[in-house]
Length: 235
Image (cartoon, rainbow, N blue to C red; front, side):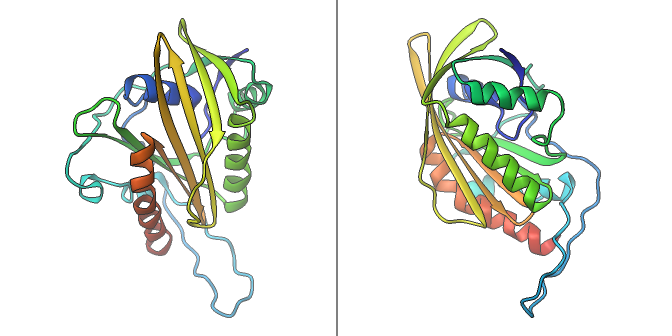
């Protein structure tokens, strides 16, 4: 089934990240919307939910070289690659992709992104994405995506004319923010294989997604979440 994935977790982007170490989207996406925050009431009673934050605000709270430490270089902005992939052998992913293709609830309008390479190695890449929407929508959408992507232990995708075998499994993640998800994907094609870890954490109306080399994801997801939590208080 031919799909166009516009979800928070782009399958074809992960394939490219794994096999080439290059991001398929711009290093940073910004929209001009304004941000709004609502104070939390200290009396324990229900308070209005915080409004989603704009992409402009999110972009200011992405990790940068000073957060990551020595040896990291920001990936230059790249033109977005075509995102069509063919999924073979995973009905849940096929259903997810077709929903996204018609502009379903899996595409968040407020977002920002940055990618980094560590010590010049193409296989040492870490990408951070920030998304904002109302809390319930973020929770349901991200949960649905992770469940779909880990529902089939092994399947194949075609990206262009290249067949790629994907092996997936859920991964452990520290208790950060309000909700956490994590998965480990191994991609094999043309005699090569590579693994990508993807961890998502929701903190209020912000979802932090860190993808890339498993060690780098584990090393920096705490920093990414901490910086995103500053967004909540700063607005």
